Length: 251
Image (cartoon, rainbow, N blue to C red; front, side):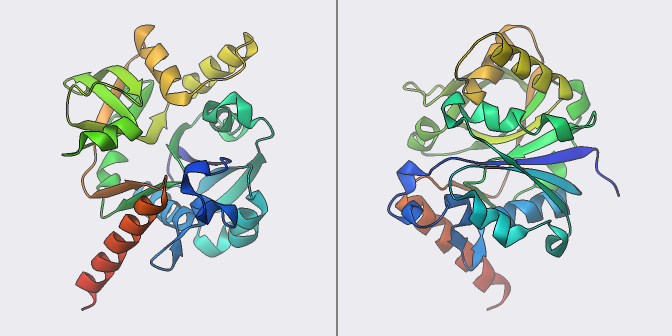
């Protein structure tokens, strides 16, 4: 099956919160039970979304990513690389840099430092994303601190009505993850926003702006495990989950 989706992995950040590990290694390259996290994302895109072409946006330690994954043939996909030379423009800029590769397709965006395990991404790939400007992956969690480190999602059924980056007040148990399916028009609107003179745009805030402007944004609830690799503790937690899952399959 040929997917109608382009994969996009923004991987240009410097990983400040993951120091000291990120001094010597890009956090997308952190080894989770012997496998680099970006490799895990490529596998999800390939095996669960049936994606054949992926754009990786490079910046900090980008050469290590390019050297590891090459043209993607070894991983069963076609990889393209784009250099982000303007990290001050926000990670929305890394998303926008993939626009020349869209060719009218929707895009599946997954940040390089987000770890997923035993998730239902295959079902996410089958959702009616043509009906929305964007679809956001969410997960219900017991710990509100996790939401405060990421972003909160307020909804009316499956329709998203508000996103808040690093919220102070938590209104529900819904954690927003930086895993989106985006319509081509989102890239056009994002490009227009930068062309208007805005120096920096945070992507979650931009999607919230689209919601307030009347664009349809929906959610898809993921099951399974998720960890944002933003510090040493989260890296250790992801590794523990991966090791336990492997041992359960092969005791």
